[in-house]
Length: 173
Image (cartoon, rainbow, N blue to C red; front, side, top):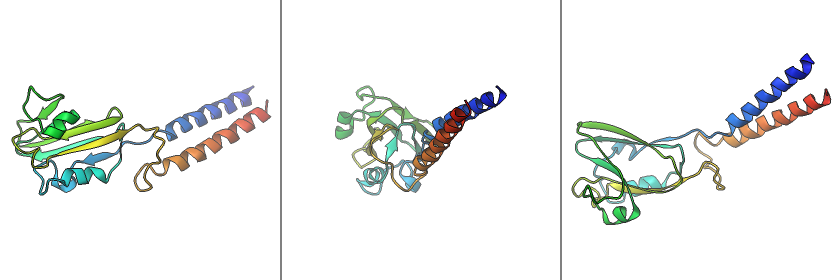
């Protein structure tokens, strides 16, 4: 009886390991890398920055800025037209009265997202970007470089251990 309980405990631990191994860790992105969130040197800077990355639910965007800027998490229409007038925009605008600001936005749902600065002509001068946030269970494989690339091999190894433990458990019954 004790050996069966011990084997059952091993099986429970193995299942917990499989569940944990399939969780993909979130990535934190510093928007604009070393430039931060500011009026860019060219109009495509942030679009080019975003185009080199894949964003998933749970990832975090970190906006760092000095001076007067905002982060609008707005609609496609506001993004395309650079609508910046507070009260006329379609979503939340994050601002700060501090000289130096760090704002973190966690991507909580899949789909298109549009970010822009609502200060003056900053958006028209290229301080904006759009991204597509993918669900964690996306059918498209994750990029080979990056922290998530070992998750599938880890899951396979833990799954093999689970199947082996189950076989041993049931052979003792």
